[in-house]
Image 1 (spheres, rainbow over the protein chains, first blue to last red):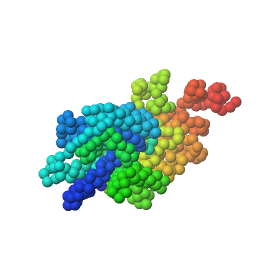
Image 2: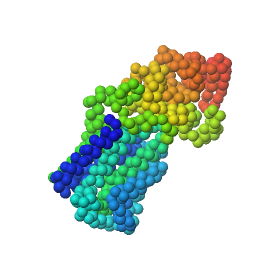
Image 3: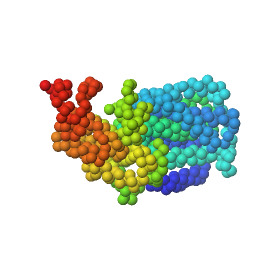
Image 4: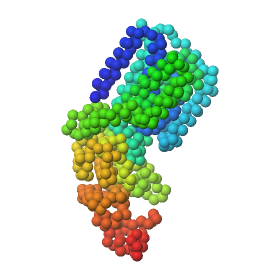
Length: 345
Length: 198
């Protein structure tokens, strides 16, 4: 499927979802939907680094929180509309990802993961001691009742913003997956030493992954203060974000853009249902049990299960992906290499 | 070997290739300059088919060698060409886990060749293979050499070494003890003592 077709489909689905939300006009559903979409963005962002290149980032909550605190800071210093806050958070978290990458990407495996966890702890300590953004007491953000778009309440507006972010994250992830960049990421994931020996600039590609991943996590966090109203370091840097960002792609499947989407919708919805029927306290228990179950039964996630049962389709796709005479289904961006130009990476 | 290819940084000495000091260049930069290697233990990209494995160096190294990215059609043609040369044409759509040991070795060489090198370092490309499989790989390396590619062969199988080499360098504990035409080197007393037994 070409990228333009995919963009069209995602846009249509997003429009249908938003139209449905407007028809129902239930604040609860909008809040719940916002949370699920936020997890779609977080899980997709995590997967760009963790799934595509195989570098497990335990610091997702830090990027999310930096995005959220960027909004808190700007809300106090120079109030901006939410789309601009998201753009600023993306830049700051992208730069944070670059810095983290430079410091940690020479580490591999568990050492890299521990370093990202340490980053989260350091940043939380900084925020706890930064009184301008509320310090350990937290900060209140009073959101207006009406959104900036006429006819939409503020929560409808926030839902729309997160829906657009989720669509953007999915489109970006799929475009990467089918591009020259995605092939380089997959080579790094499979065998970094062999990738380097085959001409793949592994460090540069990993930095690209940390920047994109960090930027999207920050974007997911930027509207959060307006959603929650009161934010403290413990909620923004909370374990649920770090755990869900990892568990959702792993349950959905890490090698495809669809995995984090499936995992986020499945786990996010289950958690919302558990919150209103039992207690939000069981949310992480659900995640943990499902994760253990999937690691044992289906280590490649739901997408992996699908590919196992419909393996022939993958084989056919592989055949089509390289033969010059075939009518390949590879996306246009899949051939960043297809148009002659000067090599960049 | 790892110092030549840039996997390890040499503490002393210099590595010169085509008249240029390679100090400071990473492994992928050396590959892009035409210095490719295969691994002693095959390291295929496990999630990719044989053809997709070969596509990686075509996307990332061959483009740099030519000064422009290859078109999709060119990549397809080169994959078919390289796999044909290596005798892997009918394995193109298989996953590496389904390959035999000798085909896995050929895939290593195929990927190195796809980088369009002028120097290929083949690290024990025949380790663990049967006699006929060794002959198969030697014939392949000879063909590559005849096509204009310099090959450094690291090998313990003397039959293959004698069959293939034009110049033989013998190392013992990291020190060079002999260097010259194979027949001459094999008669070298230190070589006999170290490798062949007296």
